[in-house]
Image (cartoon, rainbow, N blue to C red; front, side):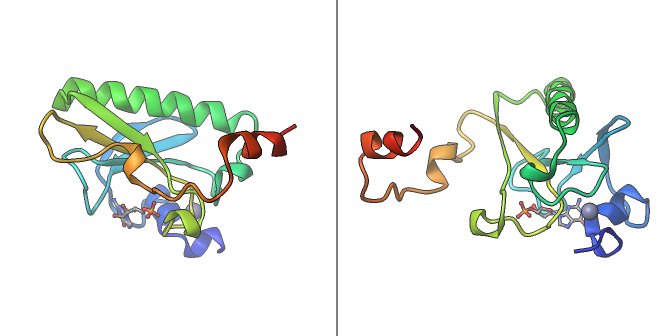
Length: 136
Ligand code: 5GP
Ligand code: ZN
């Protein structure tokens, strides 16, 4: 997809409004339009990058720094008891908008949500030891 057709590039360009909660030279964090939790936020690189593998060695750490700053901001304003932080990398993993974005879900004790372990429960037939051998 070309950046001119990308909904998140349009947000960065100011063509689509957003509720910004953190911004720096490389990164924008704004409230998700269909929140899964109060304060559900997405953080995007200002350069159009479709997936993690497209980030440069500088862009990756800059994005992580923005995640930390955004979490601090949410902590100050909303006071959650915890967070789930992660991203859907590729359509097989549930990515719908093809501009890399990290989700932050603020969490509260008793909110009824799960952990990242609830995303998938399908470890396959290979043992952990067999999988480990593939990495040697
Ligand atoms: P994905 O499934 O690709 O990881 O998540 C895309 C996220 O972007 C969804 O949670 C969706 O609600 C959010 N989203 C899509 N379009 C817009 C938009 O125009 N504005 C905002 N703030 N969020 C959007
Ligand atoms: Zn884009």
